[in-house]
Image (cartoon, rainbow, N blue to C red; front, side, top):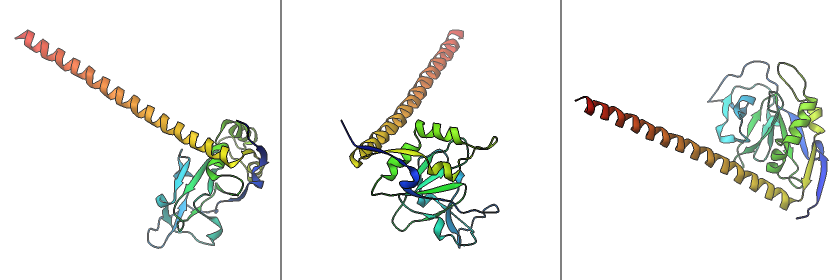
Length: 206
């Protein structure tokens, strides 16, 4: 199937800004605090649920750092420089804390889920490998992120890619579950063999 595709730098596809800089360790405040998301909250997931955000005491102006449904959070530090899609209801928000970088896609050009998928693929990761800074803790600069070349097909192709990716991830999850169940079953069978053998030995010794 043929389709139209463009290569566009990320800064032309999205509004990009750094997360809120916090000078000291955040302290939780479940009563008067503000929902916030930190690098460690993303773990290895490709999505972040706003409903899971914890509340912290934050000082200063936080509004510009709020993320909403459809935004992306980019892990600018660590061994995996990938993006997660923010998921939530229309009235849910959370403050993104540095070193997370906020990516707000131009939805008239690119789907958030497709953009996150592309950022997380091997060609993008190789690009980040080539421009990573730091030895003990690697870091991707805002400038390097801005210049990432993104291949943008039409919306139909974007949706198809996103749907196939989701199905592949679901298949992988189910295969892993199946493998675990098969192992549990085999362990059960082997234990039964051991029990039967012990019973046989006891009866033979009588």
